[in-house]
Image 1 (cartoon, rainbow, N blue to C red):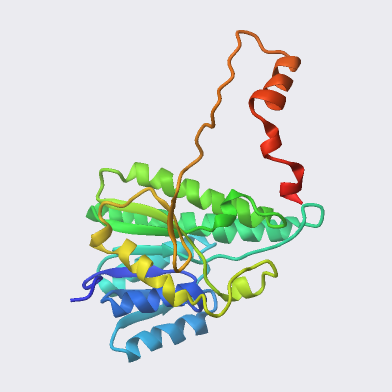
Image 2 (image 1 turned 30 degrees about the vertical axis):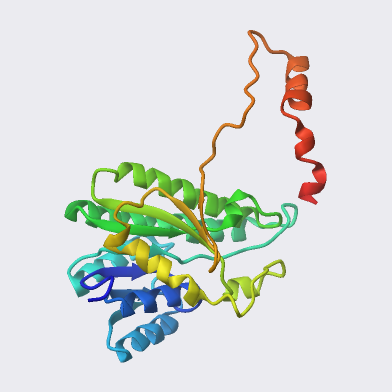
Length: 277
C-alpha cells in the first residue's frame, strides 16, 4: 500500500514545476489527485500522465483567485473521489519591482493569487475537513517571507501565507486537521526567470515532492503549525517572530531614551545599512 493510499488531494498550480512534481508523487503514493492550473491544458496533461501510469486524477483549469471557483475546486475533489484529505496551496506568481517602479495592478495580482487564492482554497477545504475531522493543508511559502529586495509584494504575500498557516493550525488544533507551510528551493520556471536565483537544473522539483507526500500522509499526524524550509539536501524549521534580548525598561521614555536604546542597548551596528544594498 502506498503512503497516500485511499487519500484524495488537491494540488493547485500543478501544471508544471513544483506543483506538477507534488501531484505526480502524491498519485504514485496512492492518492487520487485533482490537478489544478489556470492553464487548463497543462493541468490536463499532468492528469493524463498520472492516469497513464495507473493513477487516478482529474484536471481543473480554474483560477484560485476567484472564490467561487476555488470552492468548486474542493467540491470537485469531493464529487470525484468522495472526500478531500489534502490540499497543497501551490499556485502562485512572482512580480519583481523596486517600490518606486511598482504598479498597483501587479501588486494586486500577486496578493490575489498568492494570499487570497490560498485563503479561498484553504477555507473551502477547511469546511470539508472540519466536518470529517481529518485532513492536511500544506501552504507553499518562500524564504522571501523575511523580506527580499525588489520583491515587496511577493515577500509580503509569502509572509501572509506563513501567518495564515499558524493561525489555521491553532484553529484546527483539536480537529484532527494539520496545517503547515513549506519554503522549497528548486529550479522552476519562476526561479529561471529570477536573475538572483541560485538554483540550477540539478535542483529538481522532484527532490521536494517526497516531503510534500509525507506532510499529506498520516505519518505526519504530529506535525502542525510549522514553517519548513527544504533545499533538497537540508531541512530546517523556522521560528515565528519572537522577542530579541535585551528588553530595556524605564518608568518614563523620551526621545533621548529611545536614542540610547537603539544606539546602545540594541547595538544597531549589527545591522549596517550595507546589509540592504
